[in-house]
Length: 432
Ligand SMILES: [Zn+2]
Image 1 (cartoon, rainbow, N blue to C red):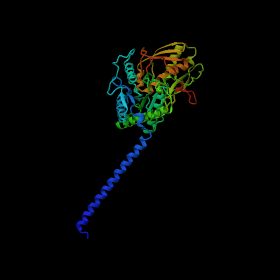
Image 2: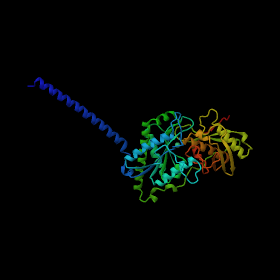
Image 3: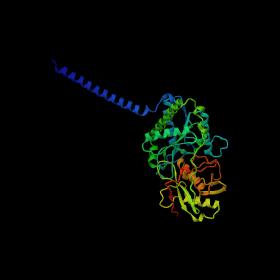
Image 4: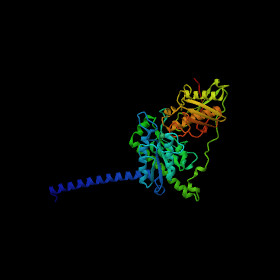
């Protein structure tokens, strides 16, 4: 017979059983959820054997005297890149990758005495290149933040040197990870002549994590949680590349030079496709206003006053038109500011030397995209109108200068007509 007292204790015991059962199921639920999440995110990518034991050099772009691109809120590129680089280091360290950092503090290397380096920025860049080349690392990840004078552009984008196939594969793997993990982004990995990519002898990629000139992305970049996501995406992209390379290596019986020195392949760009111009007309290179790739749409402008002028006068007039920006009503974007930023132009055969004012750097605002487009807007426009093969850019008379801190203007620059192919999209400017 169950007494009242016994019934009371039984009731208490059952309550505890229910309580623990619920807790148990709850914990199981969490555990299953977590492990399923791990399965979903990690399993296809992480092959520890392909990753552990590798050495990676991470370069936090800019630093010290050089803030890089600056957002409207005052957020500086050098702060964002350093924070992401440190987070990225933690990801790699957890899986047995040895990480070398070009910097772990807010500093620059302008005090280093690099041979033949005149400017602070050049000394800083060349020292980073030297660190990468002496590190014998398996790859270099250079972290940067993009910017463009107009705020419409957004999206992370990876850049590589087109003459290094491994760098292209690395850039594509990271781009793919950034796009799939961070949401809508139609940008693709693209080749660029960044000094750090050209001068290093290991596969290297510049990751521009977003546009600080876009208010939404500037806000995201100021958020530590988003920077963690960026680091995570770069890590998984790199892991995917290393896994893929390990697969490639095992499927190839003999790989000359261990696959390291693939730089022997010549840089191949498509054949020049510059248009043939009518006398009294000019072709001006402005940025295409899409959010997918960095490219130009050439604008044709009727300028009868060009006829009969000397080549130097013509060059000045055409650059004056370029500085005016796209024609009225055009959706294209200017890559260079208005005003007179040309100090001197010298022409010899198919070569030109143009001396520009350093104020152009202010317009560029430290952004890789704005720097790339400013340089090639100038070079492509001069090349197509004056039939040039190369253009040397001096800044305030100096040869080894840089405008935004990514491109070193030491060598003559060859035009890249493939950045603005003549196709269906030709804008005809109405002029002013
Ligand atoms: Zn940068």
